[in-house]
Image (cartoon, rainbow, N blue to C red; front, top):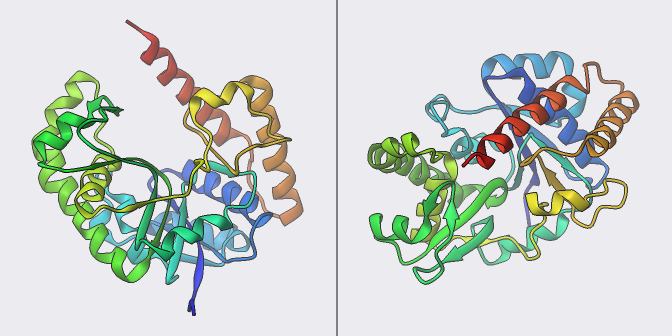
Length: 281
């Protein structure tokens, strides 16, 4: 018998993430009856309680030791008020039910979007060869993941997330920090991949719930074929307008204040800049 189960999102450092978290939560409410919680730093938690309490069923704090660098998501297990949690990034819009993802916790304490790779399956992960990462960190498998969507059982995940934080601070940053000069990205997913390989963490059911950038050109938000849009890549102008129309309508229906456009337009511009940089020779 599950004592509690719910969804969790995260906002810290930048008010834009709180605004996106509100829009994500409102989009998610159309597809679940489970509670939705926000984990935040002190400043944004205060704003959320004052302005956006109606968007969340609980507002908790990310523990201080997870607030440095890219370690925020490792604090979600401790911050979650639920026994079983599905984490959804703030920069997402939910387009359909994701209730089927809970089945992953029947066989895994933690399950992430992605795939377990062996040395024979070399992939690019944020500029790194997964085979070389496996060799450097002496892994049999590597969990190539996107950390925008994952599930966990809180009790076991507390230790898993501590291992991820320790790996990030004491292995990834110490051994790989210099690689940022080569354009590689040292986000939370590298430590998730290493610890996920060591622990053989589970993966969420296929097909993947989120749209990947190569699928964006054919995306129609009025007729989605997947339940989660994660803003990994800039939308086309007409797609962005579809997204904005939905976020504004949901805020009006919920009686919530705030500009439902500025943060998404800024995010789209930021992604556009990244796209142009990646296309440079």
